[in-house]
Image (cartoon, rainbow, N blue to C red):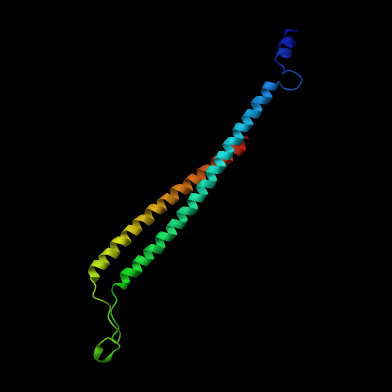
Length: 143
């Protein structure tokens, strides 16, 4: 008989849950929903940052190609299509090719450094994106 009394005291109350419990569940759901929304916003922001980083890498590559082409162009020589090896077309004004080449090489080095930095930022953004996706997935699983 003592066992039955202990058992009846341990059983959960019969009937609908107390209003306080409903508020706790509602509050927990709202909290979870807010967290999920925040994580989804972070995910969207990370994706946007990844797209921006990709665009910056593409721009840096294009700029590097342009700088390399400009440096190659500095080796330009006037065509010798005239009689006796003289140029048929007017020559450009005299230029300091060595200084221009050095300036282009310095610019190319800066662009390459910027490209490397942008690539590093892109990798960090992608890592952040993966983390946000994992957190969002964990939040969904725990709900």
